[in-house]
Amino acid sequence: VADSDDTFNEDAIRPDALMEESDRLHAGDLAKLLQRRAEFVEVSCPACGSEKRDRLWTKDGFHYDRCDECATAYVNPRPPPALLEEYYATAENYRYWSKEIFPAAEATRRLHIARPRVERVIDICERSDVRQWPVLLEVGAGHGTFCAEAVESGHFGRVIAVEPTPSNAEACRNRGIEVIARPIEQVALDGHTADVVASFEVIEHLFDPRAFVEGCAGALPSGGLLVLSCPNLKGFEVAALGVGSRTVDAEHLNYFHPESLALLLQRCGLDVLELSTPGRLDAEIVRKRALAGFLNLEREPFLKTLLIEEWHRIGPAFQRFLADNRLAAHMWAVARKP
Ligand SMILES: [Zn+2]
Image (cartoon, rainbow, N blue to C red; front, side):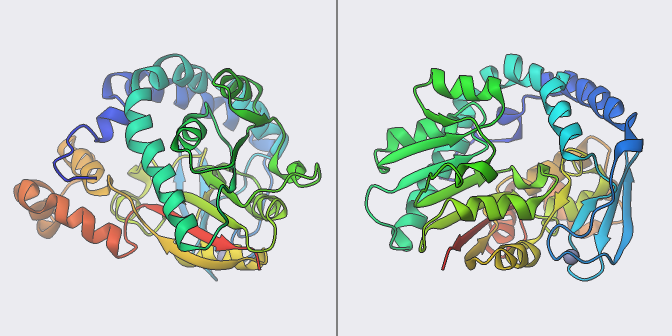
């Protein structure tokens, strides 16, 4: 996508005016979840399984640990699966997103998020010798924007949305998308297989990422591909803003980085083909936080030069540098089932 593309920015996918209300509702949802902290359970590292860890952050009453072995960060203790399910089914903020934000931002999100994702997945298929007219399965399809784009691309023999949340499954069906309304762990048991399983911004929300990856792998034949995206803990946005980053949010239970995500995929028996950080918004997000007074750059003259004084000259090149060097906060992994 061209650099002159000025319609894609943070505001277009998360309109500022609506985000204020969303933030308010989200804080209320988290406070309600925190009231049930007695039910939270301790877990080991979601990437490597180690029990060794140190406290990294505390935010909104939730504790974040970092694994001593692989440096993955994770919310610990965390809500157990049944409580998480209840949380997502009743969260006010999700209702608000369905009603206000997705409709307002749908066209932009489709053009600037779903379409590039589809193009990237097609590119991955072509580079990885996946058969023609592959079956594509998206896990956590939400409202089905990606699946709709994938169908429209004409590249796939079949496109299936895996979406256990009833209202989302219904939204997908209403767009004419084939839906399996079950958790991925049960999909392979039902005898479904796909040449490519894709999942975007899901794994960071899950109680048990390993069970999830194993579930995805279970739906793949030998040679099939798993494509995942999630935040990168070591990316610029999170590294620069720390707990002040929107990415650091109790809904995100797991914070992988390229090496630790690779480790998890390998532990699930997959061969890692690619790890990349095609993020495009780090610099802009950090700049906005600085301009809004949440990040003081007075003692960071180098960042101040990059993000404020020379922003228009250097900003886009700096973001490209981050993306090209696995330093952006949005990460993709491609793995193959042997
Ligand atoms: Zn670990």
